Length: 429
Ligand SMILES: [Zn+2]
Image (spheres, rainbow, N blue to C red):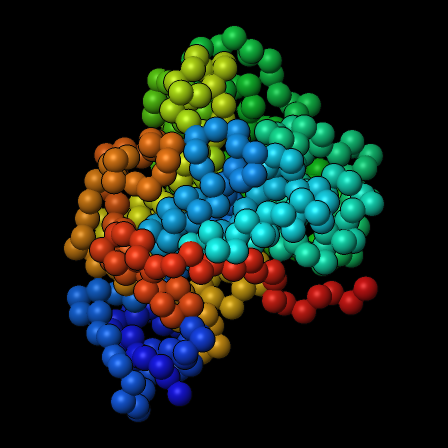
């Protein structure tokens, strides 16, 4: 029996159609079509009902900082307001999530604090901790170059055996694919375009080649933040999942003259960016993710060589791309596939589609409600965005496990997010 009904034009089976969505007491979609019951009914009027997004790649910095005032509570609130119902939280917190005790400490921090669901990545840097980690983590994140908090990528000889071991464990594995052997030292360069030369596109391509050579077919592999069309070709040919970020799609190395958009992998030339955007528009990119990394304004205002890499983005991920749908540049089916459906599938989660048996994580979007991104209106403690002034469409309402958590752009729910793990059957051992 439906506890209530959400009615209106909804994105169902690849197109917008008028439906009634029957939602159960425990927040699942029971039916899509006509609902014959007296259950309370909410008609969205001029709005459009979309599945909530999943962001495969966020850094909420809890525990341990480093800076920016971010936490699981603040990060998931931004996610909720931006239309994201599930985040994949990366393991390079402090201490890094390399054993089950650290993982369970982080899981404990989610309960009662998170506004949306959280899937916790673990780092596979301690071979002896892997079995226990795999029984509790949601996915693994592997860095092929040093990063904040995890500065020991696997030795070249260790990578093949590690990937084989991870394939046996059955969890999804996301990889930061840049080969540090191809990095060029430009330690004192003040020019933002020097960052692209320091960590050149060829470093990404080399790391992807090595990964594809060594990864067993059974590995649930995904490559994080791909920046170039050549990588799209290679990963599509290999049938491997990957993501792109809004900043690599929309910004280039010339977008700013300061360190606000310093990020790893770097923003590329306008030509490379445009080619990536074209591939995204064509539907050649399976997933979009933010790589939300909310450094403080003070840290980002340092001289370019000293500023940390990364920028916030979980709250603006979907709204920026909804504005591209509104302008006619981007097809709604392409966006829903990349932001909602495929990320949820890769993480083994029953949502991201409006279909019976899926969680009622649903958005109401009014495409007439265009705004300009204003950092003062965002919910990020760091207080800045690289997309200031960009056009955006924020969801009018967000339903999470069937409950309204966002109304008119503000979080109105309780922190009822839970820790989720992949729901697909484990691989036979
Ligand atoms: Zn990241």
